[in-house]
Image (tube, rainbow, N blue to C red; front, top):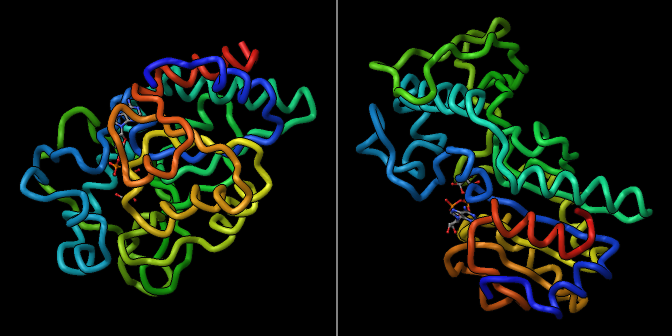
Length: 259
Ligand code: APR
């Protein structure tokens, strides 16, 4: 589908418990590159998958650290897009009617929150949090002062832990690392009790986050995908809305009557 048909509109109007899972594509229209896009500047010869790993951090701490600090500065310089705003409005509208719209995101940015939404789970952590790579103590750091639109000329070493002297690392989940269990369980519980599940802006490649929407199949809960492209999850979907979340989430929120 490229637009909302009557069945889908009715589904959104009747839904009282909606679980929404978002991925990098949701922030793409804000100017935050998705993971499968090519990198630029210092990192142009690396893919995100090369950089978002523990091995990469131990092998080239300055390169990985600077990539995250540069991306944090970019996120601080861009704005939530109409998809974030529509989701926040829809969440508020539903709460006002005794319903609930919960958001579990794979994104490490704060654009849902900055659009006024409550986020139930950051499945892959947050780029704004930092901790010691060894002892795990949280580190409070000043905001990076990079120009997020211009990659820095050279990498900088990560700061060292005040307690144990090891490198400080970004508070994100790297490939191969465990997800924060409380976030994962909260997202799973929300999907299990939902009467509608929306999966927006994710390729559905990275596990275990990608398996969460499939929990909806246990109870026959309708599944909607919002993505310009087909994904690993498309075959499991009841509706595939082919288009950008910045257009389609406002349309879904309007169809639900939330706007
Ligand atoms: N609206 C909706 N979807 C979009 C848009 C848009 N405007 N633009 C791109 N997309 C879709 C792409 O078609 C793709 O399916 O967003 C998806 C982005 O996929 P990925 O880059 O794989 O991002 P994501 O699925 O969130 O990756 C999951 O993997 O790289 C790790 O931890 C990282 O959280 C990330 C996880």
